[in-house]
Length: 78
Image (tube, rainbow, N blue to C red; front, side):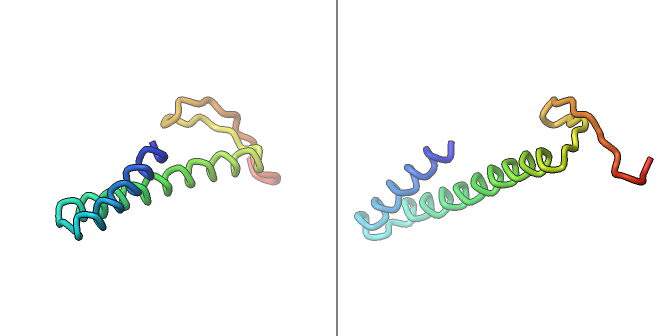
């Protein structure tokens, strides 16, 4: 999805210049840029979450992904 958005963003950027900044094309270019930013943020956060879980060894049930993960208590706590 991110690759499609980036391709669309580049295409709209070129069309914005070629159309002498037509307001509709320019607006679509800005909206697509915001979508690229939001999609990149979500992917980065999801990637980071997985790497933190692997480093800590923490596993618990996660309803949002349908994963069943073991919970390991922190040393000294019940």
